[in-house]
Image 1 (cartoon, rainbow, N blue to C red):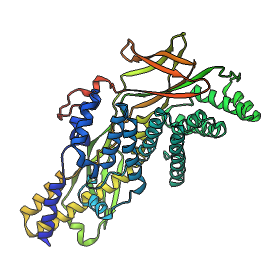
Image 2 (spheres, helix red, strand yellow; image 1 turned 90 degrees about the vertical axis):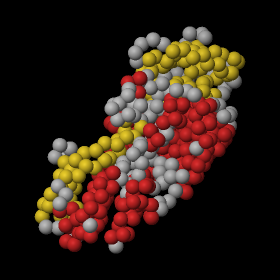
Image 3 (cartoon, one colour; image 1 turned 135 degrees about the vertical axis):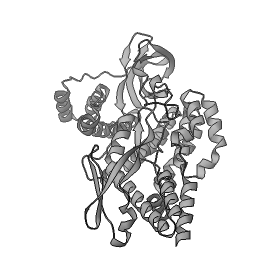
Length: 474
């Protein structure tokens, strides 16, 4: 028995890495964030083994994002489709799940966060729109609808993140561009409901003005007079229909900055026995208290333990460099881009929602390790001490997340005359000034085309050298 436990601790040590997911992939992250996308693509190709490893979802989506930014939309969708199939087929491996209770959560396959699953289909739909294939983009819309409904059924609590307003808005935009104004109206109305509800309450992000205009327009085109009057009253706006008359629309999507990365943080718990058979892990400063029933035969395993340090995952925001943007056309139209999705805030909310569960699971793992170390200590004091040290060293938070997502997404709709047009995308750094990018569009009368732009710049404060040797500071 003692040999078995000793072997277990050796395996624990071998399975443990001290790096976060971000620092483990520092070369790729440096190349990606500095805009050296060809190098980032080569690095991914060299690391092709990751495509069958525990982080294969993250490998698939990183390939998809890099290839999309390089304009290789078809290749990009091959990887996003792999990511989609992975999330659909993913099933928990209960042997690996057991290891997360004994070693740490990084020993199992990364399954993807719920919101990350949405963005896989968002990127796929955008790729198809860039390729001019509205039919294929609509297939992704239906997948999105299906996923949205399943997530809504999965979580009954109204406080859980289970409805994505931006995704509903995107579905509306695609149906709208395809001429299906009935489904577009329904999707816009769903988006409005979420913006006015959970998005305003949780993220301070209300419905964009463009969404209100699109909702009024599609209500008018559907002949929904009662709905039109209702929303005109609700928005304080009067709709006036303006036919395209030889013009076309551009829907412009801007990915601003980069989403958060995960790191780990640790806190000390005092262990007390509140009453016979129950020990309590307590941190007064954080207001945390977790009772665990301990069988009498195993109680002595943690009796000598008064305090323990435990690590948990946390998000670190990569603050945006640009505070806003607008489109300026050759004929002087100026349209500000509106924020429609705060990926950063959504990530923080989802992690916060499951922190209590994470606290409990992590503390249970720590307790189990201490009991195992105690069993070794009964045979050899030295082995027991060594096992306690290895148990502490092997504690590791799961710092994996999709780190090539934008910090936030903005959009605008702008109408332009048929033919070749030019416009300027003006990005406004929070420190002042303007960064201009020329955008060319070939407008077809009566049609809507989608343009995208990604700025990977991050507030320089994020990259300050920290004492821990990471390239980023807090």
